[in-house]
Length: 198
Image (tube, rainbow, N blue to C red; front, side, top):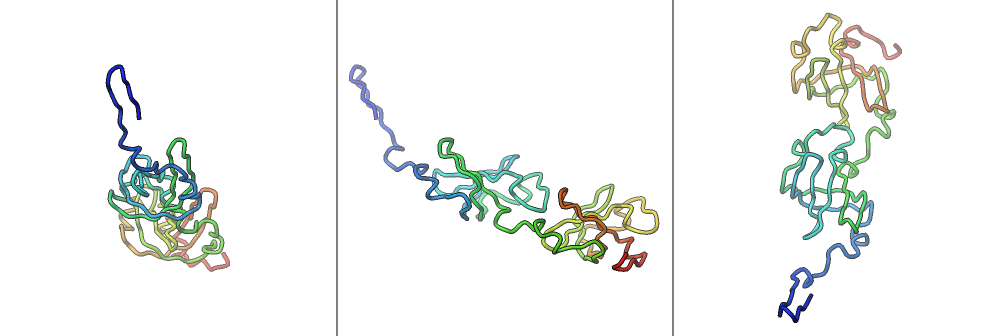
């Protein structure tokens, strides 16, 4: 790639013996395309996916799930996993590809009003217990919250005294906040025998 006759030196390049994988990358990986790749690195803010040799894309942590708040990529993925993703953005100059995992599935919050209505009785599994309540995984991987004040008509001091991880429960939907993506649930409302009309 370079000849310096004064110093009698020749510079050689190995990468020039193969074609640049980033040439015409937008044609090969158009925005919106579904791709498969292997997880090659996990960082605090996401996961790097190798699409082919020399071409990696980043799934930002916010693009992992429509319904779960992921705090660490390692909660969902490990190095070596094969994943399917969607091309969200591509910058050939910076050699950057943005990928999304959640875009493989439809966002259940887009049609939340068809899935749940206030007053519905739903069932699900307790997935997390906090000081203020319990998170319950409903259908479509949506989490609802039973606030401590909604666990029982009797006063509850500690959530874990009444509910346990993995427990299957029934509750009534008492709140749906589409903007905040939150569903409020009440076991107390079932105990008190509210009717569907209340």
